[in-house]
Each structure stands twice: as C-alpha cells, then as structure tokens.
Image (cartoon, one colour):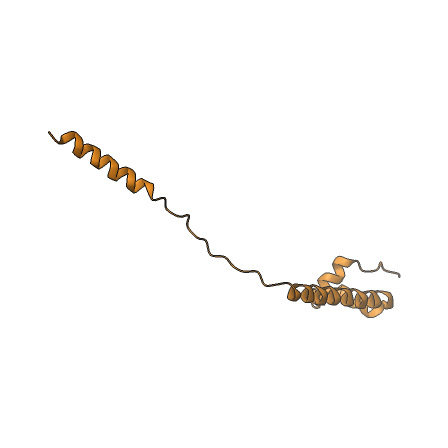
Length: 93
C-alpha cells in the first residue's frame, strides 16, 4: 500500500513537536523521500532563522523614546491674571 507524502504543514507540526503525530513519525521511518524533504525543510528553516538574526543584528538598535507631554502654554495663566486685573480696575472708584 502506497501512502501520500507529507506536506509542509505536517513537516512544520512534526518539527515543532515530534511526539504530536505518531502516524507522521511512522511515515518518516518508512519513506525515504519524506525524510529527505524533511531535512531540506529543516535546513531551510534553520537558514532563514540564521539570516534573519544576522540581518537584525546588523541593524542599529531602535531607540525607545519616552512619551513627552506637550509643553504647557504659558498664556492661560496670563489670561487669568489679566481677567483679575480687569475686575480690580472695574471695582476701583
């Protein structure tokens, strides 16, 4: 009896957890083609991980900027002081 070969999702699931699917493990024992494909898949993932790590390490570190509150305007206090002066001027005889 001939079985279908494993697909990328099955390879990924197997690499993430080799105990997750006994049927996949059994198929890999019996199928030379899938074992070779799994090794190529494993090498591709490893190569991708290495290249992306090297790329990210070559980039300058991002600087974390703190949130700075917007500057407070000085004129609201001036407006209140002006209003108080106007009230004093109107009260004076």
